Length: 240
Ligand code: UDP
Image (cartoon, rainbow, N blue to C red; front, top):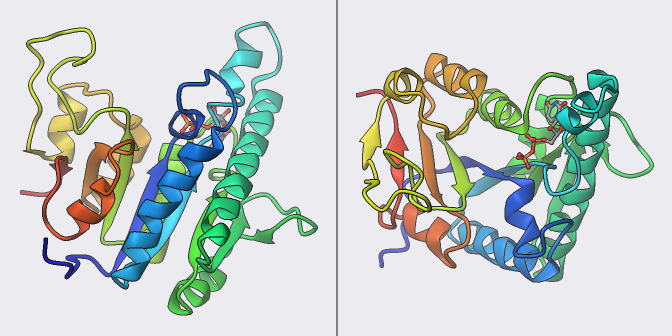
């Protein structure tokens, strides 16, 4: 494999589910360590990496709303969950001596820095991995939307959406054996076909800013690096 990357700066979206492994809840440190090693490979190639982490392995706002509680409070709880995951992933990266900073959309200065575009660009230029915590900082959004937003703000050349499977399929490949994987799609095709890969707001924001979305399996060791150098199994969503 050639180790020359096709990208200089990328945004990786890792869902909370990805960090959970097979546990059903919380963080599997071995999985966080593995994802960190994939990010370390990208750094070794000189790729600048921003990471948006989800929180669904710990809490989702809809869980509160579905039981009659206040959705906004639930979403605040969900955003706090993303901070826990961000700290876990930062810990895994630092164990590998990868210079890492956590920037939160919600100020909590005793725990991590607050997000700003200027701070992010400075950290990236100094070779740090930047982990974005707290989603967008607003209820009624998701960390997918945060990924598209941060990617646009930092001028990322692509959003790498790590999922449980190696791309976008015509149907759920775990349920339908006839499901086929798309090699490439446009953002409009993803929206028009109703393909459940990222939420609509995230795909629309990526489309508006002409940012490709690369969907790949976060569980395949070395998969991230392989795609960064032009190989690997994935679906690319881009302008045609
Ligand atoms: N959340 C939010 N605003 C955001 C991002 C996240 O309110 O900008 C909340 C929301 O309640 C969501 C939870 O945080 O359910 C966890 O995020 P998400 O569901 O996107 O995590 P993932 O599915 O990627 O693990």
